Image (cartoon, rainbow, N blue to C red; front, side):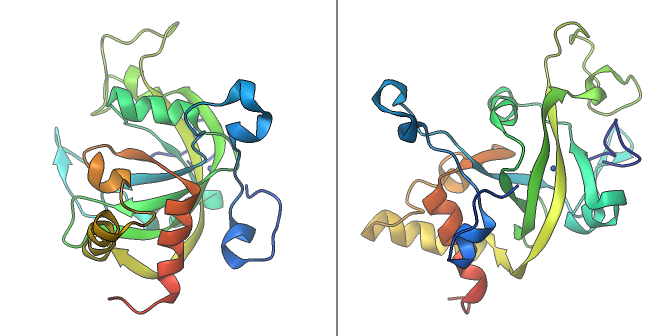
Length: 215
């Protein structure tokens, strides 16, 4: 469940502007640009992050937090906390200020992408792991070596239309069959992760769908 930023009243940069609508919105970094000595797995600079927009009680606490809740916070900024998967946590720790993420509504009647947010504060110890009253309290985590991490995110904008999971799956299946940027997208190949990396091609293709009629 997202919460106000610990360092602000409530709880998130694009790179160099370019001519196209998509690249003007997005900044990215590439390990390969640094030279052969740094080649390896591509550096992720775009993300998909899941949160629940509908009420659900966990240990008696409602964990609902949709994109409208993020918009309602002061500065439209909040702490993305409560991640309790090691792989998702590792992705949180890779995030850099200025990177963009899709806000994905999950565990709801119609899951899908609702908007875009921006990382404004890089990974730090998730405060909920030390809060005994919080549903995400972890007694095994130590203050001198926090087990879990959080980032601060800021609402950037809604997508021009909601991009439902069903539509994204159709593109994924088509791209697996015929080739295309969503053939290996983590939303379907690592579906259980609440924080997922996206390549620039995946992010740009998904974003382009907002201006097209749903198939």
